[in-house]
Length: 472
Image (cartoon, rainbow, N blue to C red; front, side, top):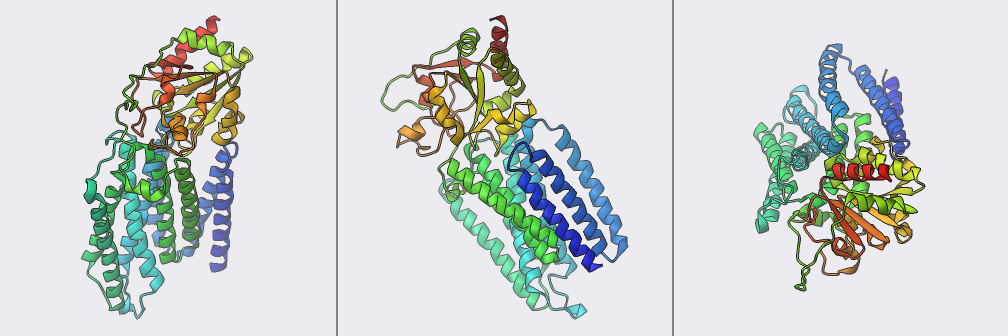
């Protein structure tokens, strides 16, 4: 029987890996998800076989039913524009589940000690469970804050304690780790007060809150990726404590891939991960003056003028940002692009790695609108195209198009790779107002001689341009 269980686990995590490989491209992402889901089903079957006491199957089946009932509706009916919130929430549930597993293991083994049954406490159970409890609790509560900021239940600006922030975080970490050490020492001596486990979980949970609250909206894509990595690592630790091969492998895959993605996202913003965790960046404040006393003026345009510019262009590059997501304008953009293509205009989409609120946010929205995957161009592939582009249409993107990142050494985002939108012959920017983006800094692109602003809701603005195109 153990032989069969091991074979099923190997098949399961092989499918996890193969499914993850499919997520490297939008064309294979759906199939990759399906393969990984089948792998998870096989892992559940293997776990049921491994349990000798079939009476526990009822509890497992009940858990599966509740999980499906709670998980399927939001996954099915949540709009693509709200997908970052859903990812943050689901990730938090994973971390919270791992923390509960660690708590249950603690209670089940009388404080990680089975002396009454003649069993010595094992290091892998104690260390694995305590690590899972700390990291899982941090991930759960941190993800809830990320969800609140993304859903705008909480302000997107940094919320912190100023200079006291880091000392308080360090103190909470010391309390959590100290409680874990005391629990481990108590287990080796035959028992430990459950109060210490409660202190550990509370300290780690408050630490999760205090770490994410001071982080502003500009860094939210990196935070989501980092919390995802933490959840994976905590799941691997719990798998080690439970001696569950599937949990160990799946957790390590999620932890490793999340860590790599976090590093890539941080590099895309030219920021270190410690600086992001330190918070205080991305307040989303108002526009900033030029610094030299000059009053800058943006040039407004109309839907008719924008339509004429694009209708007679050879190439148009659409640059989507969070403004497109908020306005749910992706379908309107696709309709407009189809009209342009019917007129012989080549339309491409420039995707910045941190555009939106999570990695791949813009790709997901455009794919929902049935935009061709081949038309979506990553930053490194499309930046050389802007100097050959007649019109660049920027829809709600601020910081990722800011030329100050290349030219102004005093800018907070200096060195951050950006889309070279300013090199296009003409730039049309769709925005509600002149307010700055998540980084809270002004964008000199908006005041350039070859840039014009089309103010209003992005969906309505694109719709108006579309109507003008139809009339041409």
